[in-house]
Structure formats: C-alpha cells, structure tokens
Image 1 (cartoon, one colour):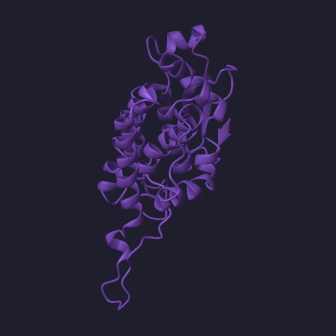
Image 2 (image 1 turned 135 degrees about the horizontal axis):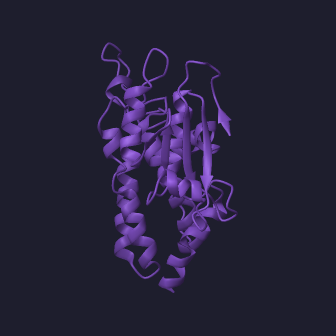
Image 3 (image 1 turned 90 degrees about the vertical axis):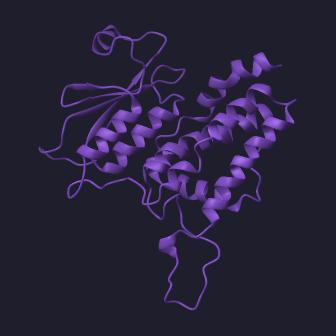
Length: 244
C-alpha cells in the first residue's frame, strides 16, 4: 500500500512487516507496527510489504538472509534492527520537510519500559500467579500516574490556577511521538491477549491509561496499523495451551 505525499523528492522507502495467519494482512508484531507508525507520522511516501513467515519468498531470502521483519529498504539500501531503523528515520527525515518525533521528556520513553515484560511473565503463569499479576498492575499504575500528572509545559507559573490532573492526549503531550510508537502497539497486544486468555481487563480506575488508549484509537496512524484481534489471539494461543 502506498501512503502519504506525492513528490519526486521523497526517498524510496519499502517497509517489510510480518504477515498475519492469512499470509497477507498485518500480523502481530509490535516492532513492525512501531516502524509503520513512525513512517506514517513522518508524512513520507512509502510502501508496505507483508511477509509470510511460513513461506518466506525466495527474493526476500536473497534480500535479507537470516533477517525477520521488520526491515526496510531506503533508496535501495537494506536497513535492519528496528531500533537503528527508527534512529535513522528520525535523523534522516527531519524538518523542515518532515517532523521530528522525539519526545521532549525522557520519562515519556521510560515510563512504559517494563510493562510488556511484566505482561509476558503474567500470561505465561496465569491464572495461578498473583505475584506476576500484581507486578503487571504496578506497571499500569506507574503509567497511569504519569499520564495523569501534568508535564512541565502544562503548568503556567504565571497563572493563579493550579493544574493538578493532566488532560493531554498522549505520553508527551497532544502529539504522537516515538514514545507512543513504542508503547501503544504493546498496550494493544496486552489489552487483547490479557482479556482473551486471562480474563483481565485494564482496570477502569486507571483513567489516564484509558484516556490515552481512547485518544490513540481515534488516530489513523495507530488504528490502521493495528493487527486484528484474531492475530494477537493466535499469536498467544500456544502460550495459553502450555500454561493449562
């Protein structure tokens, strides 16, 4: 699929991501979705190729031997390792033509750093591991506290009114940043898989987390890059079976 601007000056970019169980649609891979979102938010023209991991085409084996998606062709040059690709895109596709996506606050990156690892430990041991559930919910509490706490730029020191609860849409403000591209795909996986296999919803009292997710699902850059729920459920069915 071709996305975004039409211009002769745009670089040639092809993103390769994991295909779903049908071999065509977007599969379950938070790292693939992360780069998909970054490119979309950059506003650059690019194409997306889904790779069926069960029968990787011969031309892709030649292109990126031993490499699993996501990987990228940028003006014909292969780029691998999603973190390095993200760093490359942020450095290369910059103002004035493309927006920078780095967050202003370092904690916007750090606050969700452990949540996916806690989820993985929880789903592997659920339903008989109250300790892992507690650790997962502690990470959600940490995230919720951050989302509900005003950022420095939300506080007007010249105003007599005190801002006690943040109303921002995303981790670092009202624009999606690299921090969101990292965390949101993981939260989507957690929301779907924890409900399906552990009967665990993200608790409603985490109002900051739910505000964050609801705002994210309203954005095409996130909603349209999410794998279908069935893809996430199929990805974790073996974990659930080993556990039972």
